Length: 331
Image (tube, rainbow, N blue to C red):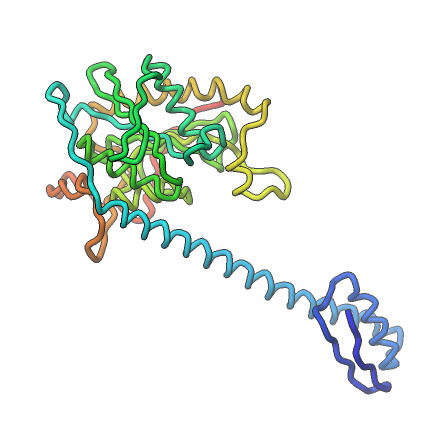
């Protein structure tokens, strides 16, 4: 702290530059000596400096939080803008005389392209495990119409469409929406597989629709499909320890010890997916989801627009009482 001028016993002194916490005590002593304060009043001066500095620090923290939220809002707005532009072109519908669209189910591994081994892309890793279980791991094909990697496989009378988006996580929904249009799959038959910070590694849960809970990939799917009825398999990755930022943590790779835990988790995740996909053939729509209403026209998925019967398009509350979450214990 720089003291520019200190006058007589009742004078003023001015502080130039920003206050620094480690020098507050020294400044208080100089201030007390300049004003000729008694020892009895020293505690009042110390308390005054501490309170003043706390106020300044609080303002700085509030400003930093506002800036952080502003940038987050700008990123979401930019992602929606890019998604809207990409959704202007729609793929041609797939023609397969041997498969009814009612028998199709889509499974999407959310993540970032080129980062299949990261925590944030554990959904993609799960889809590779599912492809191996189905004996179709060599049948992945690149589909530019849906901006992703696609694999088609038959299982117990249903056709599975496995999708790995090749767009950034924040706009994964573009790829999902295009694939839903091409293969004529209803949103309630689209299973999203993604990472979950709020669950420790080794925990799995099925969530039957509902809000995105802060996950950017899920939020993009909700925005592009104009509904949140999609069931999800949430794979726990835990939260970072210490001062590691969330962004750095989720984009990082699993440690060797974490990979040992992850291997059986992926197998259990595949079991859960196959059971849920088979069961979903007897249900039209999961509980807990709702259609996202819009006050003005936008880039709405044609799959969502096909619904016209009110009985088939329920509108839930903004925050349902139950998220329809089914927990699965540690492997």
